[in-house]
Length: 157
Image (cartoon, rainbow, N blue to C red; front, side):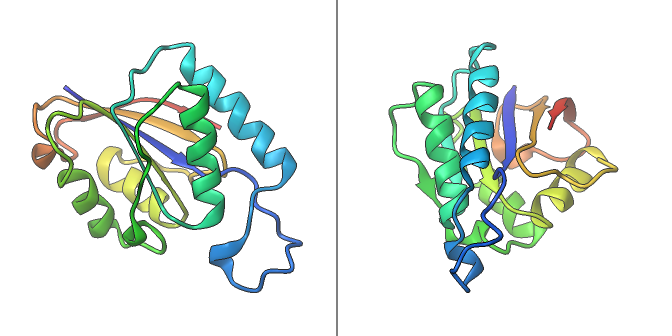
């Protein structure tokens, strides 16, 4: 079995003086929400093998908070493709993951995450800021993941 946690960054600073979306940081409220959600996830002892994140500042901040709260001591993989990604690019990122990874976190943005959730599990809502979705795949290789072996275990916002 392969386990994927899809996480959307938490509240971003809409009042930021940065004009470039890529450089917008999390608000203090967003940082606290990410910490609270990561602590909640840590209670289930998910044993995360890999964290992959968009390199945009707010997603990196979210990934770093989750890494700290989950005692993840490996490198967070920053993947430029995840910023403004098409769904096929997100799926490609996941399927290129080494099979030694059984459980991974993917931190990204909308509308990409909503499209990914629709594609994999037929999700019918907008993927909210700070939401976490757990999808389990009944397969032994990331290359084999698709909607026929995907089960949405939870969605928390």
